[in-house]
Image (cartoon, rainbow, N blue to C red; front, side, top):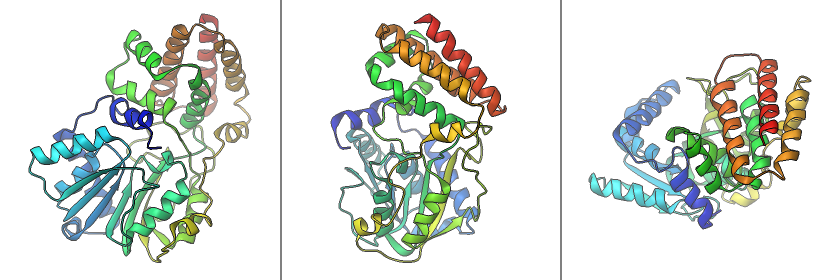
Amino acid sequence: MTDVTAGTLYGQQVHPRNRQLADAGIEMVCDTHRSQLIAMGLDPRMVRDWSVLECGGTGRDALGWIRLGAKHVTHVDLSADNVRRLQAFASDNGIANLTSHHGDLLEVDLPAGSFDVVRSRGVWHHLADPALGLARYARWCRRGGYLHLNAYRAGTYYYYGVKLFRKLAPLVTAEEMIAAMDAEAVPQNRTGALLDDFFVPYMHTASAAVVERDFARAGLTPTWPRRRGWPPVDHDIRYPDLPEKEEHIQYWLRKDAHHEDARGLAAKLDYHAGEDDLALARDLGYTAESLTAFERFRAKAKTADRARLARSLTRLYMLHSFEISIMPMAGTERHKRVADGFERETAAL
């Protein structure tokens, strides 16, 4: 995953395109760190004695730890652009207790047991092998320290739709989609979400049951939330489901056992690849209409004009992500509306 294309995509094009580090965003994630520590029953002032590893991201979350008072923060990211941007920000603002490294989290060499907190937000599900990622995260954390992980939750309507779009993504390029989004006047803060969902190399949606078994095998104990009642499939839930964001699975974990051999541990874990969200959707019984409409669209898309196809995909993504997904409604209605969208765009190609 250290190839130039993936690194450029993460660094320049997603969430949102060409994001700059800014005070408001740093303060927002600082508040998130603080509130989650309080929810775990921890005093945020403890951070002053902590060495934190932030796995991936633009660097904004790493700066949130600095603002909260962390003793030292290490940041590792696949994108050279993200690393350069964070290093420049730290230099310009006199931040000496932060280091940022360019590298693949599945390959970078970090000392075992050297971090009080290892945090991976919005990254774990994008690793080529999430089980190996979990084993490496656990190895880097000290015994008695904490890991914070989140992953895209399998079995939700939102990621059902994203998996459909990823089947169509090979028919267009990122550049063609950017041109189409510009032509459709898509707001800048939404264009990056499309590029992320379409083109990031890996998207392994996670089952809570699977990852919780892996936590137990790795000697990791959930400290927050204590218990989730997530069903394996739920297309009624909206995205984003704020403030809890239950369309993601999210955990704080305490490390109670150490495994020196990360690859050996990973071989015992199950979360190596994501769930089949289309198969989960079929179990609901009311998704046939949208699946049939999608297949009609895909058949026509294979021979369509690429610029026209890119604009159709843009409209469909905006319908799925920023109209249907965000509104509270039953899954039956969601599938009816997205099926109508696929039918309209099939006729337009």
